[in-house]
Image (cartoon, rainbow, N blue to C red; front, side, top):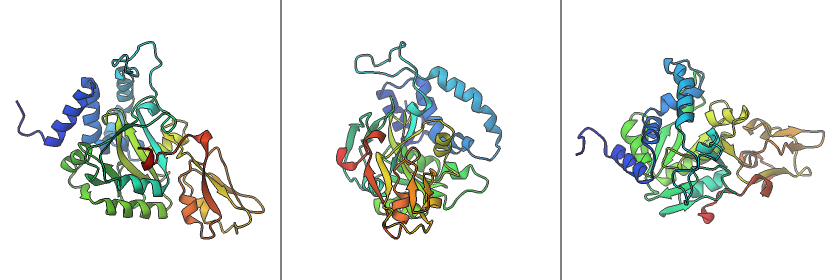
Length: 308
């Protein structure tokens, strides 16, 4: 029996979640996350809504109900294992703008698991796109949770069903369907503003990639968590480098860097390698081409369309 007032995207989410073996509490958690994303994610903002006081008990409940890491041999997980961290269940992969553009324009079905060298987390590492052209542009829940947010608000790109259609069905005033070309324009415009693209994965989002976040350190909940020592983000696998012979110390790059990874000495800019996440925003900002990205194996492998 189907309830007539339940939207098809909601039914599809619960069908896929059940087929994956997600527990009832996980399915409810996922539903709450997408249905009330402005409440859930907005808790990281600087507004003071009444639901902020639910944060501590909800985190405790999530920790209590989080299952142990499953495996092919034991789909229910091994209680002897260490429990997954918050970052294991909810994380973003920093992506240079050019790679993020390729992801939104992939134009083919994908069903793969991303290696741990690319995503160093124990859970939520799949990319499953049955309909990669189902793309929705959403008002950023992080920015919406701020008293004085950066603009524009509509910079979150949701890719693939059922999540994209769910967002459109349940947030019609804050979401709209867009083409891959418009998604590319959003990514390029945000990168030009100095904002970083991340591919986001979450366990209760069917354990998979579902969004490209284009945000800033002053608004983004994940970037703020990262700065406070909660590892929700991982490096792109690249590292920015400076050509001191070309650098003119104009100072344009440093304020663009959301990770405070650029400094200056008497000769040129330099990169604080421990802070650099390889987003490439500084590279695009440098009119003298003094900055470039290079593979940095010690920071993991990049997420590229060719690899999936």
